[in-house]
Image (cartoon, rainbow, N blue to C red; front, side, top):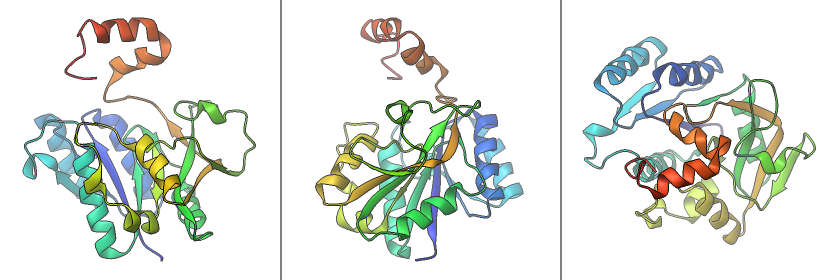
Length: 235
């Protein structure tokens, strides 16, 4: 299998998304961006950028009335496309910047074993230090490592084998995020999950949701505000 669908959900934070998109395009791969109800201004900017960089832009406002976030819809739509074309699926979030060899490393790893369900690139900050969501692996050796811990969808390949084995139509519609569940489901189905600790991507968390950074810098305040209902429309 030589081809792979690469997708990126985007919600505003245009400058960050632009850097992420450019890194993928400059790596020589094609990309589909799912615009998840960005503002009219940012939607227009994405449309202009799609013409400039030649990536496919899907405006979710044309396909669903469900309010953002629409991760479930994106996963289901992307799975359908990948199965139709018999490809793997790579999810790269809009606050992640890949290196020139990151995507190829994911694909090569996925093709190296028939029992792999997911392959993820570890994430670093701009100073090269392992950061969220892979803090649990910050002391691991810099080599590909099988793990039973959850893999984030920051920069992750879902193999065609996993896509064939489990339909995302069965995901819980009441959940907004599904990376933890799919990580565990992959293992339950008998697959192995691989974290590439030697192929990092830069992660700048929550560029489109800067308020959520408080979860990591001051978790007590974050959860207190959440309990008080300050972010009920966001959390």
